[in-house]
Image 1: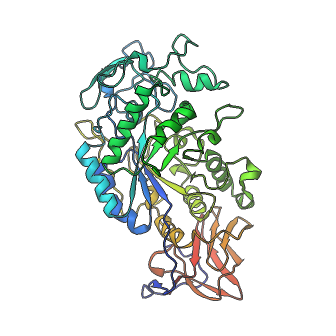
Image 2: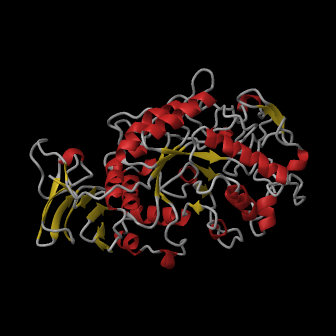
Image 3: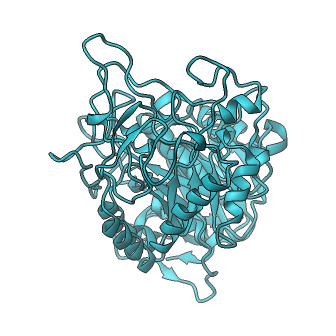
Length: 499
C-alpha cells in the first residue's frame, strides 16, 4: 500500500470528512480513451464522473476503410496503405491496424468501435454521469488507398465517395508525382498536398465545408459536446476557423497542431478559434521526469521554453507520441504515473489523461472480436504501472485507473481555482503549492526519499488524497510537512479534506 506521509493511520477507520466550507468543484480534466468501444466508454463514464473527469475523447466515429478490402500488398512485398500519423503502412498489413480508423469512407456513424445507436447510448450514459463527450473529427482527408469498401459496406475510390465527394472536392497540389507532402517549409505544401496518400479535402470549398459541418452537426445531435480536429495542421487555419464558426457558439474544439522547428505552420495560428495541445510541454516534462530533474520541472515556464501562452492543454502522451517515442509512454511505468501527477498539479492548462492498450508493433490495433469489431476495453481493480508478468500485446493498460490518478483528478476539482503560488524542488522531489488551499509533492526517482516541505496550509492533520479513504495522513507542524516518499510517489493535500 502506498504510504507517502510521515504519520499513517493504523486502520481503515479514518474516512474523509467533508469540510462545511469545502470549495465548489470545477472540472477541467479530460481523458482520451484510445480505441475504446462505445459500450466500453459508456460503462466507464460513471467512474469517471464520480472522480471529477469533465470529458472523454473518443476515437473517430465515422465509417472507415475496412482494411480487408483495401488493396492490401500482395506477394511482391510492396508497402501497404498509409498510416494516419504520416508513415506508410508496412508490407503485409492485414486490416487490423489501428490507423484504419483515421481513413474515412463516409460520415455514417458506423465503425468497428460500434453502431450509431451504441454511440448515442454512450453519450447519454456519459451525460448522466456528468461527463461530456468529445469526438475525434477526421476532416482533413478521406482514405489513403485506391479503392475498397468501408466498415458499413460503402464502396469508394481514392477520390470518389458516393453522396459526399468527387474528384473536384480534393486538392491536387501538383508538386510531386504522387501529390504527397515533400517538405514542411511552405504552408501551401503542408495544407494542400497529401499526407502519405490520404486524399486531401479542399476545405476552402463551400461544398466541402458544408458537408463537414453537416457531419459534425450530426454528431452534436447524437450528444457530442466537442471535437478534436485531427491533423488540423494540414488544414489552412482560415478553413478550419470557418468550419468551427459554423458550429453552435461555444462548441469546444481542440486542434491537433504539432510545432516543427522552423516550420511556417504553428499552433498560434489556430488558437483564435480553438484550443490546442502543447506538445512541447509533454516532451519537456516527460524528459525532465524521466531524468529525475525536479528543478527543471519547477522552472518550466512558457516564456523560458518557447511554449504557448498559459491556458493551452497539457498531456503526457497520446496515441501518436507513445508510438514514436516523442513522450513518455505506459512502458515508463512509475515515471509515466509521476508525470501524470505533475500534470494534474499544474495550472498551465487543462489536462488530458490518456488510456490505451499495450503493443509491440506500433501499427498493431487493439484486440478484435471474430467479426473484426474491437473488443470492449476492461480495467481490473488492480490496474497499475507494473503488472505481474508485464504487459501483453493488446492488453488494456488503463493508465487513468493507475493508483492515485483519479484521486488526483478529484483533488484538482477542489483546488484548481487557487493559483499555484510556488514551484520548487528538494533534491529529486518536485513541490507545487497553492497557498493556504493545497500542497503537492512527487518523487521523481525510483528510490525512496525523506523530505521536509515548507507549506502554507494551517498546522494540523490532512488526508493524503492520493491514497483512497484517508488511509494515509500528513501532519503539518510549524508550517512543515515531513514526507516519506517511495519511488515515483506523490502526495497531495487540501484544506477541505481532513480526517
